[in-house]
Image (cartoon, rainbow, N blue to C red; front, side, top):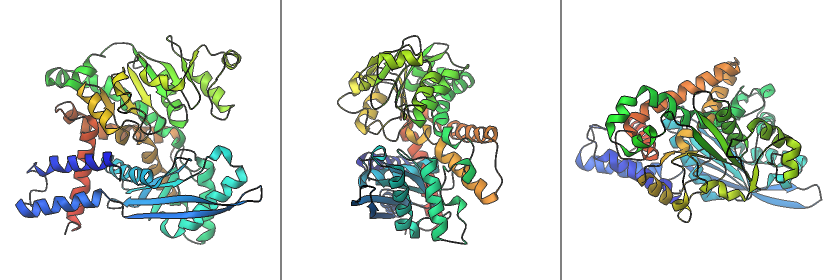
Length: 459
């Protein structure tokens, strides 16, 4: 498991070890022994499955494509986590992401464990027929460890409802007569997917930010004013002020988060910059987000890269180098691209005072510590981008019950779930010096530890 997650888990356990009200039955030597067991259990995956998918390409060549399924922990329920299609996928990354899923589900009281998958390909370089075969082979190779009550994959970077439909169909053909609807989530609506699943992560990312800067600030203004906490001072500094937002990554998560900001009437916020793998666009007066989404939908997901394309789309923006989005002088930075985007080399150049992690692990441990010391609020991935797995849980439930919710019901359930988590976490965060990430991890580790202890797994 990546060192960042290991250290945060260990730090969480260290904080809980000193809290005599936590697991009070454990005293002295038995307490230390139990916590050593917890560190070992939560710092390693239960299983790492690896295979080489044999694929016949359309040009006649046969290739072997590395693929992974990591099952980190199933203490709270079946393993759950997306399958990433990307050329940079590696075993360590997938193990780390699986661990994050375990902690994310624990944080939000979703009855799943943590898992993750990966296939080392660039999906843009594969034909539809080849991608279909890759999906079939993935399910075929890992079918023994997947299933609605074992391990439930979902889309991740480079995959979508199309791939989940293909995979569910293959699972159904391999296991005739068995329940199959809940074997994959993030499916298309016609194949038993949930309304609102595609927008869920982006909506949750924006809601986590909006809730702190509007709802919580409004309801807890006196508490925040009296706390003396450096993060509380940051929030109070934005009360009734216009906010500028930059979004790194304009895929499924970043574009929806940007649209939510564009449409939000509760905050005076405007999206002044967005970026993708090719370009960064900037307009100090605010970008036309619906027009940009319309353009990307017709151009394989890519933002305009030339003045001619901007003009044809009716979009006013200046074109810049893509990575400049990170160091813009804005109030809020939403990171919805890849991991390790803010790190030791660029952390001192970051000007945003609020960072929202729409992607997984986009801020390294060193950068997190440095920025948090400056009073920067980092809403971590474990909290902010859980909308996808929360609505995946609703999809799984709907498949079991064969009763389906309206989109409005799904979004209400999502908001209620995230609000409950934040109401549980934020008072402590704004009352002590720990960064929000550490507060979230402590809560997750506390829940997992309690269940493991109750199940007798620490001996």
